[in-house]
Every structure is written in structure tokens, then in C-alpha cells.
Image (cartoon, rainbow, N blue to C red):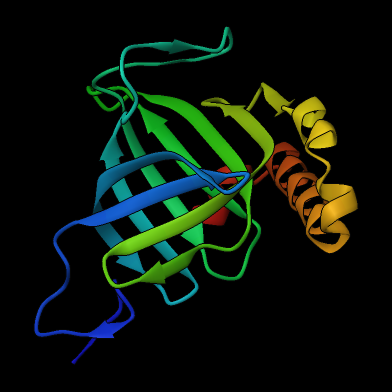
Length: 172
């Protein structure tokens, strides 16, 4: 039987996956997640806020108890993370521009390309983030094709977020 959650044969689905986010060749964070679904192109997992303490961005706070439902695509240059409080109240969507996810065994590997987008729960606030970090990363010089894909991905996410259907339409 093929296990759609891990791309390998198995008698039963994997109960836990490990998500590893890298940036500039170094591991930024690695955390356990529960598999939710796998369409073949997109794998969805759920995990609690994995960093220590509170991270206050000004426009949103990520804190212990928050739950992230994370959508990673094998064929798209981004990941979308739906963020809810522990009580289930939607805070919004944090969108990471990344290389396409690599899923092997019980691991999801994702390379962060600096660009991000925040979309508030009601869709009224759409913020492009870290464009200065992206410019400073030198990716446009070292890997111009990847840099162009990253910019296209951010533009596509921004357009989707501002559309009538909103960012949630990507996850339907």
C-alpha cells in the first residue's frame, strides 16, 4: 500500500512528521507535526507554535498554545500557515516564500527564501515582509532563476490575498 503522507510504501500512515526549515544552508527550526492530508502536490500538517516564548511582530503575536495548520507544496514556491489560538480563533495566514517542499520518509524539508506575506483573519491587512532581507541575501546574483521564482510567488500570494476569494481559496 502506498503511503501518500510519506512517499514510501507502508502498512500504515506515519503518525508524526518532522518539519525542518532551512535558510542559507542552516537549520532555522525543526519541529514535530501531525499529518493532516496529502494530495500528492500538497502536504498539510498541524503543529503547535514551535519556538520558545512569544514572538510579537506588531501586527500579530505568535505564542505558546497557538496552532499552525501548515500547507507545503511540492510544486510551488511557497508554504501557507493558518494560525489559530489554542481556542480555535483564526489569527490569520503567514505565507513563507520557499523552494518547493521535499518530502522524504517522515521528513518535510523546506528552504526559506526570506520573502513572507501576512494576511489578517478578516483579509483586511495584507503585508509584504522581509523584502529588504531578500535583497540583501544576494539570491538574485547567486541563483537568479530561484530569485525570480521567489518574487513571482510573493506576487501571486499577494494577488490571491487581495482577491475576493482570499488566501483561504488556496487551501480549499
